[in-house]
Length: 197
Image (cartoon, rainbow, N blue to C red; front, side, top):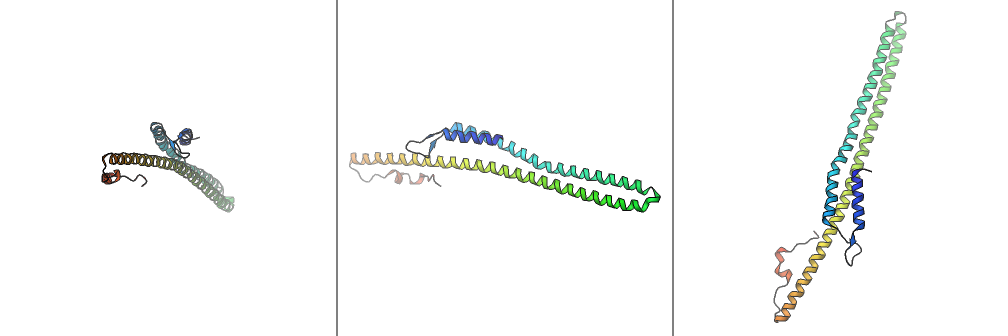
């Protein structure tokens, strides 16, 4: 299990262990310091994981270079064999034919090795990119859920405070016999904030 997966598991377990808000079965109460600590650790580990998969992608060049070296060695061996055959005058024609056959075979095998190495390297890269994207998508989902929960909690708090304010204003009106004192919304139109945006 990677460091990112371990931290995500810890965040999920932390969320599962949080208490529900009073009178709610879907909203929870989280400790800001605890969740900040987990998210900070996640931010710290994410670049390390990405570097690990970048290293896997970089191995593509090493695989291709190894394949080139092997193909060059095969061609060098074939060339050496050709030189040996050509040096023998009585079998010169046979040497040319055999040499061409060896070169063709060596080139064919070298191309096959290169093709296989390239396909393997591309597969490593595709899997590394997909894994990294899956991790980032999981992180994005967790952060989105946290932001939604925070927004809902804040909206409820503002609505509760507004209701209390209006009760106080109405009570003062009744005590003084006045009916024209502005409500909290009218008194604070310029500073009202819509937290659902």
